[in-house]
Image 1 (cartoon, rainbow, N blue to C red):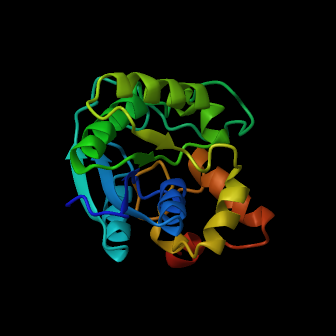
Image 2: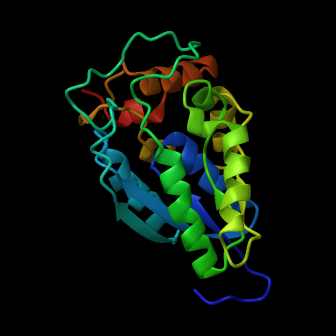
Length: 226
C-alpha cells in the first residue's frame, strides 16, 4: 500500500468479536484506511477467525492472518484440559482462567511492525473497561506505556495506540455499534468452540446481558438457533 497524501492509514487488531469489529467501524467512521491483523493462536473459539476474515472482506480491507504458538500458556482458551469458567461473578476483578499470558503484548508487537512497514500512524484495539477489570494487558496504563516503549524501538517513533472503547461498558459498545451499523450477526464472542454460542461462558453472558439491558435480542442468537 503506497503512502498517498491525505490518506490516514491504521492497523486494526481484528478478532471477529463484538468489541474489535465495533472498533473497526469506529475507525472507519473517522476516515481511516485500515489493514487488519487476525491471530490464530490455537484458541478454542477458532470460529472468530473465519468471521474476522469475513468482516475484513465485507469492508474491503487488506488483512493478514498470523498463526502463532502459545501452547505453553495456562489458559482455558488454549488448553482444553482446563475447564472453561461459567457462572463467574461478572463484577469480579480476579484474573479468569481465560487470560492468555502476554497476548496483547504479542499482538501489539506485530501491529507496530506492520504499522511502521506500511506507514500507518494508528493502531486500533478493542480493549475496554470490562476486559481490563480481569485482564492486566487491557489496562489503559499498560496500553499507553507499551506505546511509549515500542516507539523507542522504531525508526518512525510516532505510532499511537487508539482504544476508542476503553471507558465503555458492553452496553455502551453495543449502542455505539448500532449507530455505526455494525453487523453484530457476523461477530462471535463465545469462548467455547461449538457451532452455536454456549450461553454459559463469561463472554456469552456479558454479551447477552448487554443486549437484554437495551431491550434487544442478540442477533447472533437468532442466526444460531438450535
